[in-house]
Image (cartoon, rainbow, N blue to C red; front, top):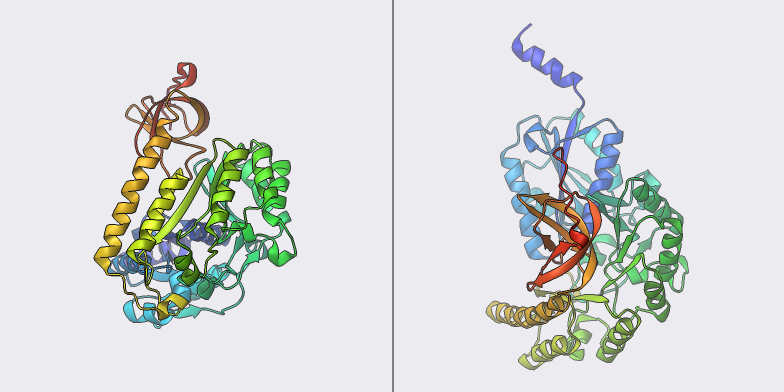
Length: 465
């Protein structure tokens, strides 16, 4: 028997392999985790090296132009290194939004599967392995957003001792600049029972932090007839999984931070005093053009109520600069607003002109250099605020979730830092991780805190880690 035939027989006998690369937001991360789970249950083995994967899946982001550029760069690089027998799949938001463009840009692409069809990934991969390379298969049924429990997939993604837990998908808002409703459709809330089952599974895996995510967490349950669904869900979670010490709420919508929600957040120690409320702007005229809530006084009142109920609360928000028609005066109103409210965490972005959105019909009439200058000015102002907020913690103690260590340094996050978007806590010690440890803060930078373990708890990391 020839060497080539022996190699082919060994390849046929070994389990098929796959690799998933996920780009974009945590919602994409959860979908990628769900796809990986389904594929592994079907007998495929996960690999972290593209050269060792029979099927390579890129879970793309299509929210704004820079995200699509990153997705295209990733797909192009992987396509260039493919062997004839390997298969390349584009999944996720860009695949859902512009499948024809993907096919045109990537002749070597073997299949496309969108955000509404990802639970069919096993059937798609089976088809790919049974056919020769050719025209890209397309799994795009344009159905409603799938609930992961319907397909036996988890609605979460685990990383270290933390997890993202998706409570809903899609969005029923119609912000002028946003393509998400075009990609995913209206909000679909998961049943509380399914979310609690996922939370218990995370508890059993030893997860210490759960971050609740959806396009709009405060819309949770509205489609199920619930009046204050997020607050009800949080009450159910703290009862179901008291063993998980940190539960965090991300992506709340302005105007829907209810008194009951504030009361629930303040009453339960498990619920971190951290809330993410993307405001997008602070001038009423811009907000109206964005089709966003324009009552800026409500924001002031809500921030005051949150800080009164939870004195150490961290409020994170995001803003867009350079929206069509934004005047110098409107931008200055935004800058003055962040200096007035002094949010602990702020992210800012320049406006990205997206076709087929309501704002796409407006002239993109703020020059790129003006957008860039405004972004820099806004973030420089926020850096002063952030540094002041961080320095206020010097001399105080707070729990820190340790996430990595090496070379005499341990890194972690406090409740003040959501994963992947906020800062870190740095300790000059090589400590066990993951674990929660009380840390006394000794210094602060614009984005990070520096500390030492309380009572000098300098437990050396195990050599096997």
